Length: 139
Length: 127
Length: 248
Image (cartoon, rainbow over all chains, first blue to last red; front, side):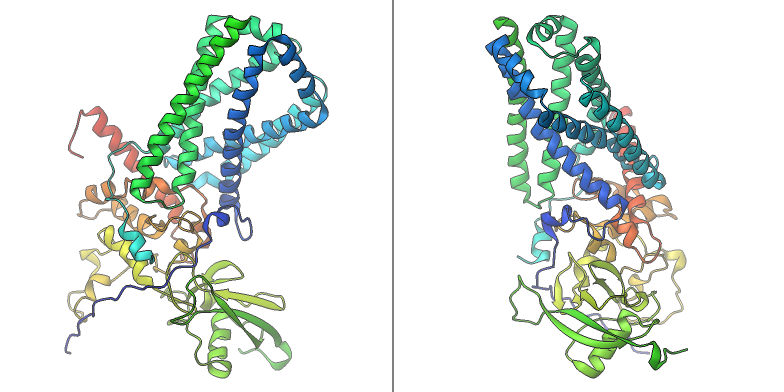
């Protein structure tokens, strides 16, 4: 049988259809790992914003007890306490899922990633619930 | 630009730089400890939590607290900035843009830590 | 067994179309009403559309039984092989080409871009022990022989959210291929491939979304392979660090 030659390829000039940055956060069709990716990314970005907000608010301490204590009284109002609960949830999700990312991401328990994510979310929910009770209970 | 043209801009593989992921894992482990300590200090040391001015200032006058909080600031800033860098790099920028962004992030990160330490000094001086 | 007339229902197929000269930033969609039964697959429906409604519809297929990897596409936003994907329930089905790979025409994507990533990994899937010297193959074809689970369908790359925004990412398939060599070198030297993939645009770009493994129709589990590749890369770096500049 005569052999044939493979012809050189011509590169495609057509663009690919990409979901882009919006696609990172689109939960449609996602399974557990994809949802973990979304919540980790959102909680991380939210915590970065909180970090800088926290540093700015701390500058009120330079202005003395009047400014700081006034802020604290505002911070104890129910709408701000809701924010505290959201912050707690964000820290728990990011921290506990981060344990999964660290362990799985270094190849240590690659086959257990789903179980680790579920465990992280269950623990987060429980601690957030207890934390919310304490936050709104005035403690 | 076609996907192949975009792919051609990819930097040579086999980078010798320590992967940012490893830094994130290590700083994350440290933060699990430091953040827990920070939350315990803020909410469980003083009966009503560290809320009002006098309690906060008394707490901050402790050198051990200062050392722990500054360490916390360094690690949380590193983890935060590296995380934002990782998110931005997923946009598919060129290698040159990524190097420039990395330089900007170093400035922002160091600036954040310097700001935090200066703020702490200002708070204690004003008290 | 074939579906009887009483089993049939009409489903509207909304199919992505692109021809040369179309606006590269837009896909247009054509609709086709097709009679489908309980056992009708997406590929069955596309063949029927091309045969009876629109002979210009472009799509790839070959084996009809999920072993060639040619018919990968997105159905209602989720990746799959058209030949084994049943037509979903519901009045309407959207069919689109794989994402993150250049579109040639309609549902056909340029798989060369996908294969190029395997070239970068040195095509470590080719193993001398599994080739058949007596086989009479066309020039250049022998090196393309494969005997692995991966059928190179491109579905994993389409499902990956990182590849969705960064075309420079090597992608799950090539990384999984690299891991197969590293895990079982069979006389080959895995060092160069490990060093190649120990890179921010390769193994360390994955963010553990695991969509590639969920979408893979062939049980490759590329995400787990990437994680094990990372573990090997981290271990190699640690060995170099503690051997004070060893040669791996």
